[in-house]
Length: 317
Image (cartoon, rainbow, N blue to C red):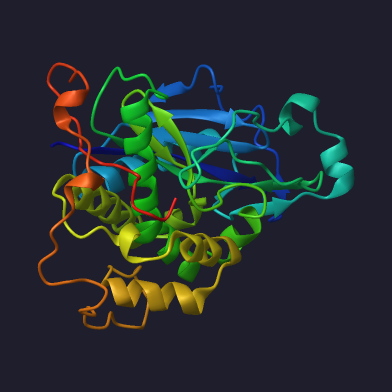
């Protein structure tokens, strides 16, 4: 089954003196109507700037499109200003008070929790603090009702697998992201989409290098492929409560321990090497129990697509 990976990261802006300033009024495009550019689109998002890319089929496409759109975004901002890939910033109070209300407005659409299936609660942010995300969009279907039973459950399962491939590993390289996670992006955060799902756990920290961009793409595809091929599921090897705790508290030691046990691909620059897979954790021949899967024939299949047969019934809900 073909899978597409897109992204809509947010970045901040610094002026010539190195101070963070609001990006409002610097570029065209809004949430409702992004401004198209080659390989994607750009827009203003509160005090930050946001861009998205056309969905990518390959690692090379994904990295290239991120770079192409970021370069165009940089060329749009005033001379002497620069893009800032910090995951959170705190504006000076006097400057923040001077901004128009629409620039200070925060998004209000809810996130959903892949572990409970319910809407997530958000923390209260200090007035002058703003965070930047690096959401990923995984597409494998089209024209689905986001909250229909089968599709919603498939989304939940994929998000839990992505937490094991990406969420745990992000704890190792994304220190600023832990501050953001007190407000947004807790483990399991997602939004179901007609084309697939939006993974909302990561901050924008993976924009720091092309190596991290490539790693994000590869592990997004790896999580999806692992489920479609019914290989050993990472999210079933670990207790879901512990996975959430590690991601939400930023426990690097435990994150690395779990990744090594799984034999997962570590983020670029991580010194530790994965240990051999433990037989008790990952059996040599994993035979999934039929009860854990939905029947592909139970839901009508849109033309030209196939349903991934996933289920969240793994005992850790």
